[in-house]
Image (tube, rainbow, N blue to C red; front, side, top):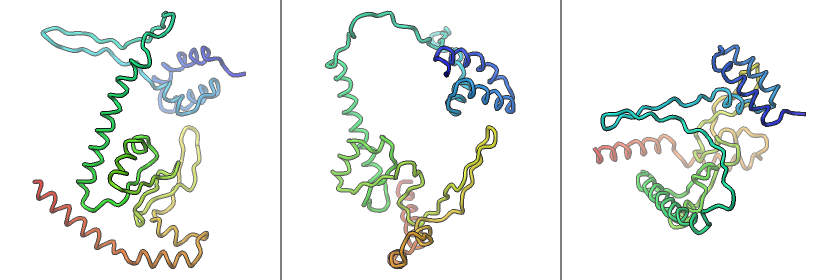
Length: 233
């Protein structure tokens, strides 16, 4: 049977000062002991043990100094129902939603205007800062198609020729994690070398990619970027 929450908190209070004063080698041993006792995730345990209490701040104004101590969490003794109703909470939520939509529209519109090439498609990762109602409304207004990266595939991108590395192995040695990556290759090269793709598909892909001159597009982009910088300067 595992420890209770209070017992875990007591163990954390015991190990925390020892962990923060220990050397790098000693920290690894203390961390292993802490993980065996509490059953915490490794990264969560490191955050718990390494967290330090913020120091007092000194603010100077009108000829005197004011100390600001870190606020301590106090238990609430209030009884009864909450004072704030859903209607009252809904007002600031509505105001925040309005400004959130406004700022999102402005940021995406500025991005589209400053881009040197015409934007045909909007591609993002899986973060909620991009996948939300405001972005969807803007995309429909601009008549752009929208794609996103796959879950847990941070190397997904729209550049068909940009070389990327893929993780081939991951080994833990004590407190260290050793990762090994393959040689950088672009998506086009990886598809061409894949055994899962038919030769017919590979030939069609090579024919399609032969239409694009990467050197020409790079020089075109650099020339227009220099013109825009000169116009702004």
